[in-house]
Image 1 (cartoon, rainbow, N blue to C red):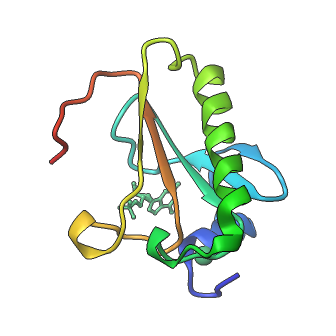
Image 2 (image 1 turned 45 degrees about the vertical axis):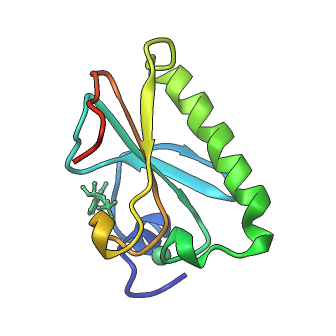
Length: 115
Ligand code: 5GP
Ligand code: ZN
């Protein structure tokens, strides 16, 4: 927990959010500024600023997050047509919240390469 981290404050529910899934390791909630019909942020409850700060011991956590994303995509009805999972890391990728988060985006078609 980092007191000045927005997503840590969402985890502690000090800041309200539209939570779609929670367990002891992760929280998933709808993005406040959705970029697609489905836009969910999946975050570890452990405060990790960026994916460049991951440690060897986080391997199980990362695997778990991917299974949560798989299940959420199914539940949200976007698994069949497909979806995009995005992680922005640091300045060049325009990361704006420094607590690791996976964007789960679906419900429309996406271009490639990304902007
Ligand atoms: P980043 O640019 O760091 O990859 O993504 C941060 C995301 O957090 C953005 O998509 C932004 O809309 C979302 N976000 C920022 N503040 C809040 C908030 O207070 N609540 C929710 N639900 N999402 C937020
Ligand atoms: Zn945090």
